[in-house]
Length: 525
Image (cartoon, rainbow, N blue to C red; front, side, top):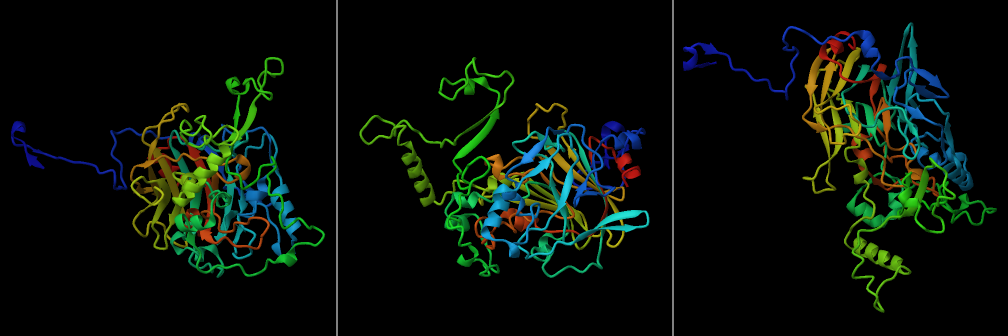
């Protein structure tokens, strides 16, 4: 308070609210924007409270009205699905030929019109780790018991007309959990929760579940270890794989043809693919180009081409005896590659794929709740990438009892116009049992993306969601033909987001749209 001469020395109260803090009360003008339960339920876009299982997968009982699925056949799911157990096998009972068939010929189909989000149990195929989870039914109550395992699924597929959740948040979104951390569960010694204790307690994850596993084929392995990765210190090849594993009746199996369903070599990083209806591109007066005579109206064309390097061709294609031409331009590309590697540069940077594309919620052992977010950080010279972590005070989430957790992504500059592509800002507001306990600093809003590669090499990898844990990244990565080999490096997703929740989850829902404080307190808690 202060003396104000103009107000005849009356005492006037000065006040200021700091939105970096949280308060268990709300100031308002006397009226409230109080939603009804029915209006909130209309905003539900995913609901796993009923725990519907089909063929071992956990399905949402509700679908998002903006979903689309015209039928999906994943022909290359084996190349990525072996890394998290979506495609499973027993490595002790496989020949190399059997594994190559699983890796290159596995398929997965989602019937047209099925727009339910589904999650699969994470397992991996190396047999090094134990992922424990189970459905528990006690009277009328059902809940998932997580003790080192978790469920994971994709909500959008790059290269396909399939999407069951929004990948950009233009307005608010709320995640609802009924969750019970447990202190009496005993973990297995080989649980992933023992690998990275700093990640214990992650109970939700969104973004790309792994980096591009094939990027190491594009670059020299020594550069990969020196400039990007953290070498393993305790993992070695146990010697399971040897020449005896190759069958004598398969003489060329030692040098198998490592190609995807489109015939592309998995070590080729020079190609790209687009789908377009732009006639300017394919009415191009070439032998393979379309004309008015063979064009089918309304057709969508898929084009493959070589990636073009950022090279000034003018001094090189100079009509001299030593100048390059269109016939030998590949030699110039090879020269630029050599110079780049000598300078320690990588032709493929996995960090670009994960910036602003990995997010997790976590409860610490002390009962604090918060988030981890991998972001673009231009001030960090180490790949311009950092992981932000913020938490509430300790003791906000009680162990061994049910807690209602509501996480609101509050968009600061919301819009209903999907063509408005400006970067949105947000704050994360976390409510525990109806009371606001945490507000984050201002962040870039979640906006997930695919990897910088052909869609065949990333089926089911970007646009992921996990319940009961984070992501194992490439911890269980397998590459042909040595399916017994263990990767010799750790990439960021594994290091920062590989962890699981030890406890129970009774309800998980996703709401899209603005839900006010009163509704969160009265209906969602």
